[in-house]
Every structure is written in C-alpha cells, then in structure tokens.
Image 1 (cartoon, one colour):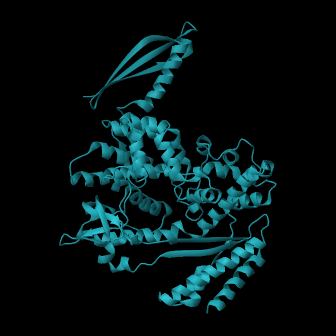
Image 2: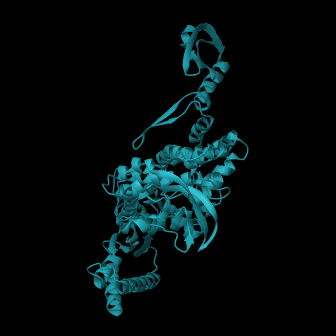
Image 3: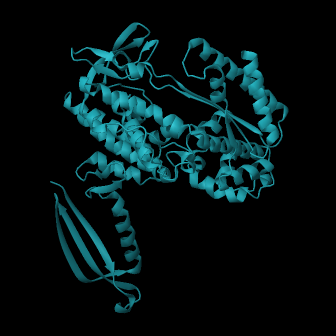
Length: 532
C-alpha cells in the first residue's frame, strides 16, 4: 500500500494580510492511499514571506519528484503513453525525461532537413525516444511469455530504449558527417549518448535503481557486457527503435509507402536460441526474436517497407542537398574559428556554434547545440563577411538549394536501360561512376575557391543484412518453419532474396553556375564513352 501526503499552499491576496512580514494562506492537503485520493483544506494559516517562497519552490519541485502521479503523454503514433504510478522504474524514467539532456531532444528533429520536402516531418527525437520506450514495453511482453521474468534485465532494456538517442546533435546524421571530416568526438551521437548515460544527472537518476544500473544501461545501448534476450529489445532486426521510427517517419512525412503490419508481427514474434560465431565456427548461442511461420509475408513487408523509406524519405535528393550545404557551412565555421577569424562568421563569440568550434571536447557546450540554435543563427550568418558562410546560410534559410544531377541514374540508363541487373552491366556502371567521381574530385581541387561549386554525394543502403561471412543472429530475420526449423528469411522469401542494394551518386551545383553544370555533363559523357 502506497501513501503519499501532498501539501499545497494557496497564497491569499496581500490586502487580506495585516502584517507585511506575514502572508495569509490556505493549506490544501491531499493524501493518496493506493489509487484513492483524499482532500483536506485549512484556512487562516500564516507564513512569513521567506517561508512562503520556500513553500512555492517545494511545491513546484514536487511535480517532478512525486512518485505517485500517473504521467501521460499523447503521441500521434501510439496515442496514450503512460508512465505507471506504481513502478519505481517508470517513476525514475519520467524524471529522466525532465533532465536537460533529454529535454534538448525536443529541439532535435528526427528527420533533420526532411521537413524541407515533407512539411509534416517535424517530429523530434524526444517523441521518438518516448515511442521507443513504449514499443519496448510491448516487446517485453513477448520476452516474458517465453521464460521466467528477470526484472533487472527488463528494467535495463526499458531504460536503454528510452535513452538510446540522447547524444544526437543538430540535424543528427549530417552533424556526424561534420564530426567524421574534422575528427570531432562529440559529434558522434553514440559516443555522446554513452557519456550522458554513464555520468551526470541522467546517470544519477538511473542509479537510484541500484548501484551500477547506469553502466548496465550504457553497456546494453553499446551492445557490450552481458547479452541476454533482453538485448534484442534494444538491438535486433525487430528492436523497438526500428519498429517506432519506421512507423513514425512514415506517419509524419505523409508517405504512403512502407506500411507494416505491426500488430501481426508482434503477435507472431517468438524467442529462440540462435547459434553465434564467426564464419562457419559456432562459439555459442544467444536468445533473440524470431518470426513464426504465419508472419512470413508480414516480415517481407517489413523489410520492403524499410527499404522504401530510404530512396523516398531518408535519401531524398533535396534533403541530402540541404545536408551537404549544412556540412560545408559548419566545417567552414570550425576552420575560421581555429584560424582566429571569428569576425568573418557573423556570430558573436559566445554563440554555441562558435563555442563548440573553439572547444569541441566540452560536453556541456555540445549540449547547447540543437536544430533551433542552427536555424536561429542563419539570419546572423546571412550577414557574414565570409562568402561561403553568407551564401550557404542564405540558401538554407530561404531554401534556395543547389540543383541535383543524378549521376548514377544517367550512367545506369546508358549501360542498362532496361534495368536487367546483368552482372557485366552492373560492373560497368560501378567502374564508370568511380571514374566520374575521380574526375569531379580533381576538378573541385583545381577550382578550390571560397565556395564549393560542385558538391558530390554518395551513399548506399542494403535492403537486408543476412550476416554473410559470419553467423549474425541479430543481423538477420530468422523464421520458424512449420516443421520447427529456423531459417533465414531470404531462404523463405524470393522477394527478399532478390532485393538489390540502393545506391546513390549525385552532384549538386548552383543553378546559376552553368559552367559547373557543363563540367558535370562533360565528365559524365566522356567517361561513359570511355567505359563503352
């Protein structure tokens, strides 16, 4: 039986008090006994002004720390997400939501620049993280149905699901590209998440679940330490992260692609022991999610759905074009700051972007960065003395982006116009793309002025990881056949087996720079002729 006494002090108007040093008040007392609430009120109490201020402070803090209030969040995907009143874990996780690192996720968009293409895709890492926690609770029911309950591992997995994205910087993956080019550790979201979970205010709250709990959570997010079936909730082909972002990104972007049969998938998830090892040498087994025989088509749709999101949403040419401009803009800021040329940037020295460029190892400064900081800085940088910063800030602010030339699409049409997928033709396409990339890089180096005239973009995405070369139990979808045997989904689905990688190779240029466009066209034409 839980009992909580909650006291509320209502200050009365000043004219009703006779003494300026004292303030008349009315005391409201609320007692929670189990799920029942009892209310009491007492008039004619007095507080001196200092005590009154203290009472107000205490009351406001109690909204955060009270362990007895059911907390509810309305979510566009999951509807009602509750943090239960009678759960120590969920009370603590609700408090994690109130921390500065977690609140920052309200200002980091889940899809970065995608809202330039899909205006509805403005959802945040905050909403996604709460959705992942909710989905993890659903997956945990599958785990519980397969064996004895292990509270410590369950709690660890649920906490890991909630905090797994804490370290994302502004525009997420585009910011990570900046970090890779400049070797900035705190631009790596996995590294920053690890730091925030292991130490600081998030860790302090998590460790109220027990000494070392925060470390266990961080290890589970990093796929380190003890591995149990609970790790599959956080990291597997059917982890809570993917099951939330696939549906959330589809919903918020308005895309009609990539629908999955979520309820059927969950209803047909099972737990099974899968062999682990390297190449053909088995070293042990691990328990993870597998799909029952009735859900093969749902699993196919799941794989196809994720694959469709890449060309249509994640790798959209306009989104990627904005990311390329953002990347060059931030790199320029860092270079000018390191060269002691801050006056060229157009930002005050105390601006978080400048502070981060000066001290990129400072976690507290890194936590000051989010999407809103960048958007708010664009108008200032639009007045910068530096040509690249001024030009690229204006392009992002006003959505005056570079034009895209889809080089791979044009080369593919030249060598395989009917998309036969012939191996020899595919090899020629790869060779030609590589040579065009080489020539564009050489041209960019010769034309290296203040502003990059051609921005090159390359990426690829495998539709399905089958753990080829090693026995990767969590990297593939295992299906239980009617005979009880576990096989890779590719062995049961010709659709999945025949999926090919999605690759992109694009060049971006200023629409008014006809010389750059002519150069791109000439290089493509020349290399296509050479490869023929």
